[in-house]
Amino acid sequence: MPRPAIRLVILAAALAAAGCTSVEPWVKPYERQNFADPIMASDRNPVSTSYLNHVFEAREGARGALGSHGGGCGCN
Image (cartoon, rainbow, N blue to C red):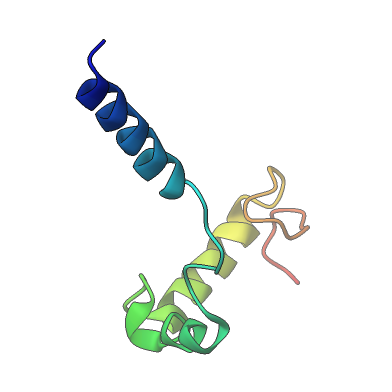
């Protein structure tokens, strides 16, 4: 293998290895507030979704719908 090719392989390996390290987290603590913004929610109407989840839990309580306990009768 010629010398320039060896140098090129070593340079490519060094660049590839340098891309694998991470010294800092990608999202800094002061940037996390942006993810808590309501505009970032995937739900357009959280109140309605919460109510529908409650109804679903009451109907499917015997199966264990979303984590709460219930008998399926809707009386809680």
